[in-house]
Length: 226
Image (cartoon, rainbow, N blue to C red; front, side, top):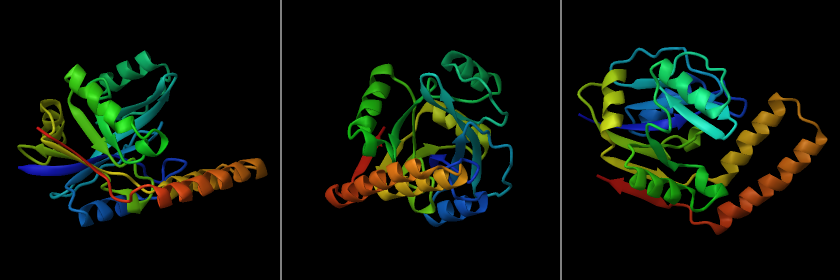
C-alpha cells in the first residue's frame, strides 16, 4: 500500500506554532496525506490519534549543542541537549533520529540557505542513508510542503517505521512562503511577552521575508525517486 506522509510539523505546543492536533489532521487529510509526524520543539507528543485512515507519528525536535535533532516515534520527554546524549535518548525510547536517516527536504530550509536541501540530499546519497522529508509547518498553509511516499504493509506505526528504514520511494517538496516564517516568529514573541527591541527586529525580518516572496519563484518542486 502506498502512503504519503509529511514528517515534520509543529503544533501549538511549540512556542512558534499555532495549530491544534485536530487542525493538523484535517489539513493533512485535505491535502491527500495519510499521516504526519508532529515534532514540537523540545516537547514529545504523548497524545494518540485513533483513526483507521490516518496515522499520527509522535516525534520531537530537540535543540542540541550542535543544532536541531529530529526524533520520530518518540513518546517520552527527552531532557538531553548534548548531541550524543540526545541521540542515545531517542534510541532508548525506540525512536529514529537524523543519524538513522537524513531529512532531504524541509519546506523552510531553503529560505535561509538556498542550497540547504540540495546539500542534505547529496549527504544522504553519499552516506547511503534513508531519507525523510517534511514541511516544517507551523501554520496550516504550510502542511504538505514536504512529503515522503512509502510502501507499507499496513497503516501502523511499526509498518511505517520499517518502511522508512527500507527507504522512501519518492520525496516531493515545495518551498514555503517566507511570510509564514515571519508569522510564526511573531507568535513566539507574543507568547514570550517580548520587548520592543524584539518586535523591531521582527519587523525588519518580516520586511525581508516579504521581499523574498516577491523575488523568489513561488512554486519550486524537488523530487527524488527511487
